[in-house]
Image 1 (cartoon, one colour):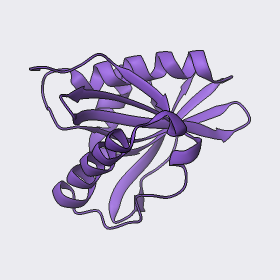
Image 2 (cartoon, one colour):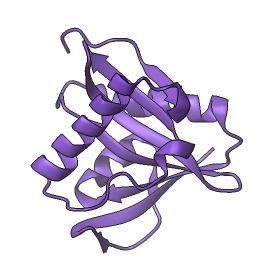
Image 3 (tube, one colour):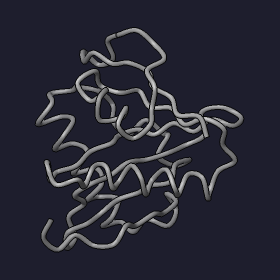
Image 4 (tube, one colour):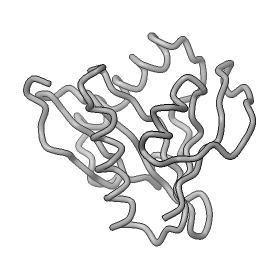
Length: 147
């Protein structure tokens, strides 16, 4: 994995301008350029999220955000890795879930998963709780993990 740094977790107000820029750049690279998803990425949920990421130098190479989506429910979203096949995504999720447990009062963690990522989330401990639906032109399913 090269020079991937330690796991970084920050509230929105704690992010440096450079970190925020790199997060948004990585999100655009994966969701817009690689997956051709056309949507308003900056949806105002970032301000209320914790931002969990790994960096290589200044470059954010793995990222997720987590925010309250109900009284005792947290949703994980915008999950990405620029480095594939080296376990970085699984490590990001494990460490992200640990941080959620520390920082939030939570009974359930949800993810709106792309259908093609269903097995990835199942291996981490999520269960499918919905049928398939289209979100931004991509087939998704809802998945949950009880805490």
